[in-house]
Amino acid sequence: MRCWILVMKCCHLRWFILGLDPLNESVEDIEAAGELISKVRDNITYFHSSRYVSDLANGDICVAAGYSGDIFQAAARAEEAGRDFTIGYSIPKEGAALWFDMMAIPADAPNPDNAHAFINFILDPEIAAEISEYVRYANPNLAANEYLSDELINDPAIYPETDVMQNLYVQVEKTQDILRARTRTWNRVKSGR
Image 1 (cartoon, rainbow, N blue to C red):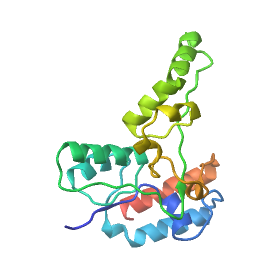
Image 2 (spheres, one colour; image 1 turned 90 degrees about the vertical axis):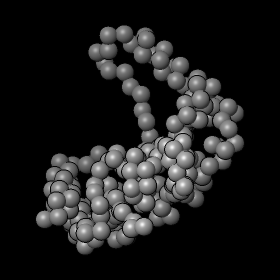
Image 3 (cartoon, rainbow, N blue to C red; image 1 turned 30 degrees about the vertical axis):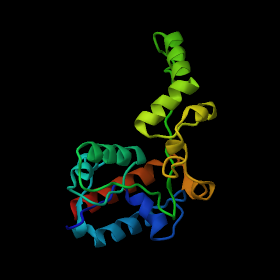
């Protein structure tokens, strides 16, 4: 079977392969990452931020760089369909971007009381645990831990060990110059020009 490769974000390669700090961006770093990906461009099937979920589940690709929940969703779909392969997820030893969800209430929300009630509902430990069990995402609600299955809470792909967490980073807001350089470079890489 030929392995298809999907790469979603060139910014992460700077750190992993080029040894650069992902939070200390410069136009030169972005261009270096673009040049690196361009060298293997012919081996990349496509660039997409969601298509890989169904393609992994169907066995159309065998390697993808993706979000943890998406990979877990693909694995569940493959298992439900009785595929003769399993899909695994791992965090690169070099590290990765740490994501998080956030709930916010717009300043002009027509009914902020209902919004607060919904947030409180989601934050209820039993509800938070139920959501985590269904979507296979970690949640930060420590009180929910007692309601989580051992399988979920002990899965290092969902709740990484401390040494892995130390290699994760939170992306920061970028300047317009950096955003333009990243968009320009990324478009050049994706188009192959």
